[in-house]
Image (cartoon, rainbow, N blue to C red):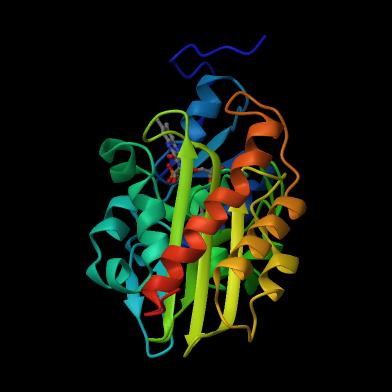
Length: 296
Ligand SMILES: Cc1cc2nc3c(=O)[nH]c(=O)nc-3n(C[C@H](O)[C@H](O)[C@H](O)COP(=O)(O)OP(=O)(O)OC[C@H]3O[C@@H](n4cnc5c(N)ncnc54)[C@H](O)[C@@H]3O)c2cc1C
């Protein structure tokens, strides 16, 4: 039977490496026996519920190289151990990456946002992870590091199933790269939970680019409606090159409804998620279009 004892029932060894290099050495040495711990807000819950019994914990809390937000000419680079609160307070993120800012603001309470990191939110592999839809909508990719080198993966290829990601036991996320949106773009994130600061029953992020009355680029990502956060690839094609109008927004929203594959779970039902999906997509499309400077 699943328990939640509020204590950690098994022994583990604890390491606090001071650099990425040292972290990768430890991951390589201990492999499957080890787990990284960033804020611990997902991992410790799983350990207390006795769903995980790592023998080794490798903390990222003393690896300053993983804690940064850097703005280049064409991208934002976010260190994996950057906390949700640090993202929330970063003025460039608030100004330029509205959907990511809104997602972070919707997550948990400030105490959890002070601990939880963006890398932990992604690596946990939850279909409901709130930072995943905005990052997918912006066309982001991840840098994964191991002792054998570095690889770069689009976010769509990172999530493999509930709790499953493309990370090997020897790898870590080192940074998230978000292409810088041009001035004629806009984005929005919406989420429904049972109460405020709850995990999503469903969440959606939309990214649009505008040329006059036409939509020149559309990306839509949804969470908690499939085994992983998903891009609505068929729906995204409908507005490309089209005049943005109410009937088009309706068509895109209904296409999203066709693309999702929700289930019944503790947070919601398949039926509710199917019903509410087009309403949320519609609202997010309108908000993102307005932020592009467009009107209907
Ligand atoms: C009360 C409460 C409310 C919450 N509300 C929300 C919410 O509204 N929305 C939401 O999305 N989440 C929510 N969460 C979940 C959690 O807070 C977030 O997912 C958080 O971002 C996890 O980050 P962390 O640093 O604490 O991860 P950790 O718990 O430290 O790690 C999570 C997993 O990621 C791995 N990991 C961590 N960093 C890396 C890395 N750099 N490379 C590779 N693997 C890594 C760990 O080994 C572990 O498997 C909530 C949690 C709690 C307890």
